[in-house]
Amino acid sequence: MVSRLSLLRFTILKKYAQIALPNTYELTPHGRDTMNIFQTLSAQDFFANYWQKQPVVFRQAIKNFQSPLEPDELAGLACEEDIESRLVLETGGEKPWQALSGPFEESRLSKLAESGWSLSVQGADRILLEVSALLKYFRFLPAWLLDDIMVSYAPDGGSVGAHIDNYDVFIIQGQGKRRWLLGGAPQYDEEYHEDLDIRLLKEFAPKHEWELEHGDILYIPTRFAHHGIALGECLNYSVGFRAPTDGELIRSLANWAIENDLPERFFSYSASGAQGSASEITADSLSQIKNHMKAYIDSEHFTQWFGQHISEPKTFFAPPEQEEQLKEAQLESLMSEGAILIPSEGLKRCWSAAPSPTLYIEGERICLPEGSSAALVQQISDCDLLSHKEVSSFSPEVNLWPTLCELCNKGYLTLSRD
Image 1 (tube, rainbow, N blue to C red):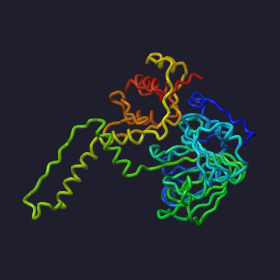
Image 2 (cartoon, rainbow, N blue to C red):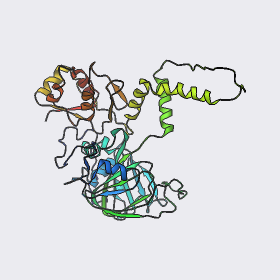
Image 3 (spheres, one colour):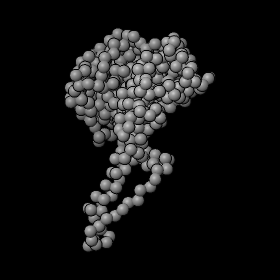
Image 4 (cartoon, helix red, strand yellow):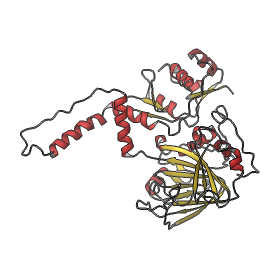
């Protein structure tokens, strides 16, 4: 990542909207306990023994893996507006472990030293279709837990120091090698160095050590201290899964209820007699308040809020402007001639079966034709592409063309005519 690289600047949004998905990815169904994760463990074994319990390495987890990005392309992304990027300078900055935010000038990156730094780009799954295709390997986990895919590069010896993350992460070794040092248990009482731009641990006593090579995947549970050190030039893909905090959920639910102007339900106090002390908050009173609030949580409003909240993307890119708004008949005609629909890069989708089959995309509740089944909603939410044959298979159950046309015109689905 120094001057010998071309440091490409290129238009990244929707660059790969119509490319074919990499055929070197040997994909297998996930989500059932009997299925293997990365050709190694069953889902049942993984969740019983590793998920949020201890780290594990999957050797050659992705056969014939081809890195979607080259280091110079990553540098090009870091030079673009509206892309979240960060440069960490362990040495060579104004102070040790200086953190700089992008976008960066090409000249700045071209003058970097041979070691002592690391460059990363957040939300790469929202930028390039080939990066978002990596998410196929993680379908044994709820898609709504996904945070994003971060891509990072470091020269020999480069790192971001020993630290702790508040999410579970799978690190795919894309190019080169990296040595990983990990703690033996989650930490909650850690101390950090003061006056640094990044949160680095004062004390770090690793219990595990692994060296990752091309195609290997390392799983690091939340709150496990870790330190990755590049062995030569090194490029990684970090697939992060982050559960929301209780504070986030409470604030989001309250804001959603206010924004949607929901009818207010007044609390109705019931009593069998007078209290011994008028100022006491009795156990019975607390129970009544809890039941009053629980009734709201058990309502359909709660499901709609959560679907919209959890499908809201961390990194937002405005859908591309449509040169021409598609008509239903036009879309059906083009697809009957072989065109297919591909979800846009990193499209955040989820669905729920109750109280009725409902689809959520990018924080929006999508209206579906009356009579839409759970199988239909699941097909739209899980699909990698939709062909005319697949859409027609739901007829005469429902007329899906108006919905698909709307999703195309919003930029959620891309029509590929190749």
